Length: 262
Image 1: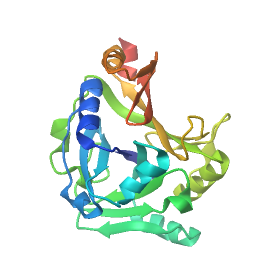
Image 2 (image 1 turned 120 degrees about the vertical axis):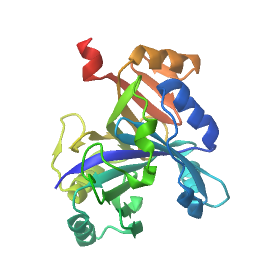
Image 3 (image 1 turned 90 degrees about the vertical axis):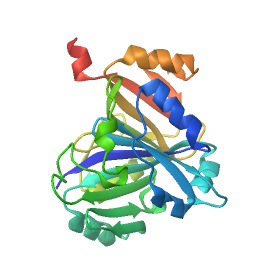
């Protein structure tokens, strides 16, 4: 069984400014807006980064889960770690055996969804989904939450993939062990625990930015890091030689293998 990082979801107070910031800095564009999230009082935008998706959601009415999350974390930031698996049945059985509650779930002809309760996982929302149908398990295969045409909206001139997510926790070891139990993947790492998915790492670190537990950062592989940093600086979002801060997230900018070769 394998498990890939397929999508990172962020929550923002307003969608349009964050969407524009990511377009300006990372050079990516909106591929899809899911009308289904309106059921939860949200609007969203999905922006491809390589064969993964960056999603931004924002509340459009009072008293939504997204709005309450904004209040708890003191503003915009990371919301969900969304993974793709190759066999949903054993994953669901594992979750049930561990007594982890499921917040939301659905199944269609092309997709199986399972969103876990953050109080039972710690760190953030952890979602495990399976795409069904032709080429469903290919790394570059279809992904129903992003619509049918998302691959035609990929722009990889500046960023090419999401290679890590960083969860800040009151007790990183405990939270990491829980995610490890659920994912059935052994932890590694010396300074902090690391859960290695097929295409990315999940790091578990202490809360160190004055904000409570949550998804605090991501690492992006960059084809043109200088261009990203220059655009981030123009927005006063650059924080170091290899990091910027957008939508309440630490975004670490790593050179891609292709850019290193040049």
